[in-house]
Length: 172
Image (tube, rainbow, N blue to C red; front, side, top):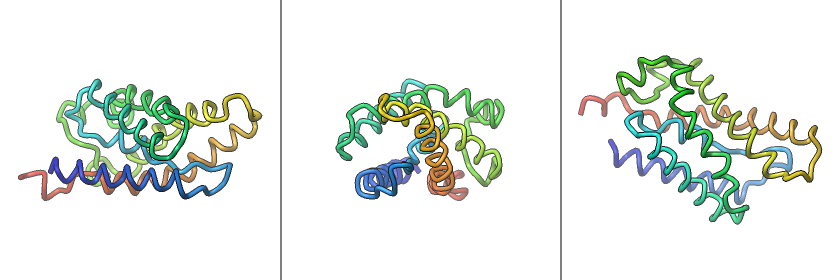
C-alpha cells in the first residue's frame, strides 16, 4: 500500500506541476490541489514529517514551474501545520485515535468536502496575497482567491478519492 501511495503522490505532484506551469487558465484563477495532498497524507505521519513533506512538495512545485521559489511552500506549510487540528475539527478525535486515513467512503462526502474547502481556503488566503505582493487591489485579490477556491475544491475532491486508501488494501 505504501508504494502505491508514494507512486500516486508523485504522479499527482507531476500533474500539479504541469497544471501550474502549462495550464494558465486566467489571471483570476489558480488551479491547485496541493492542500488536499497534504491533508490526505497517512494519519500515522507525525507533524514534523508532514511539514517536511509539505516543504519539499512546495519547493519542487516552485522549482519546476519557474515560479517564485518558496511561494508555494509559504502557503503549504500552514496547511501542514494545522492539519491535525483541521482533522479534529471536521472529523472528530476518532479518526486520529483509530489512526484511519481520510476516506470519502468512511467519513462521508460532506465532511471530506468541508475539510478540503477549509484546507484549500487557508492555502489560497496565503498564496494569493503573497503572489500579488502588494501590486494588486484588495478586490482583485479577493476575487482571485474566491475563484481559485471555487475551481480547486471540486478538483481536490477528485484527488482525495484518488489518494484514499482502497478498502481491499486495508486488510493486507
